[in-house]
Image 1 (cartoon, rainbow, N blue to C red):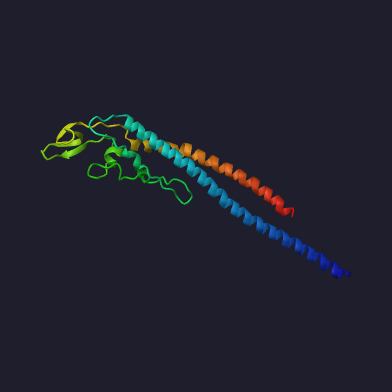
Image 2 (tube, rainbow, N blue to C red; image 1 turned 30 degrees about the horizontal axis):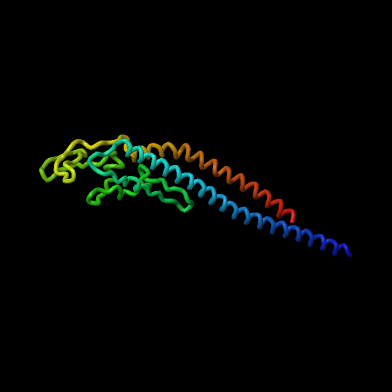
Length: 213
């Protein structure tokens, strides 16, 4: 083999190794991109499941405490406040927690009065256990929620309605405003760290496998 042929053979081997390394780098880059997307999706989904569970637990405990605070004697409770929770998830599977007072968590059409009107502000936000305000057919006016009597005609104003303070709405708002920057953020960071560690380990194993082939 002439010197020129030897040099050509060496150059071919170098090019083959360079092409092989380049292909491996491209394959590793594509693999890393796929696994990164998968890692993020898994982490967000896991946090979303934790988040929704915590929000639901706080909500139901708060509503139960509200109902336990007063036992009605003049009307039958329908417990429709439980229907106000209406969590919505974003594209990553996490609970959307936006709006003043976390308003997007609630379906404001509940609870409903006898005429089908929403009592959300009266009960959920202000904390009244029923009652009504206004001027009746007798010309009597009440500016704060009062009960009516007698059962079942409700023709006359009775005493001031019972009220729980802080209201369920403000209790939930207060607790979530503490949980979001504290417990929720710490849990999100912990979940992301766990998934990142799994990603790094998986990536290292794949690099060894590809580079040794």
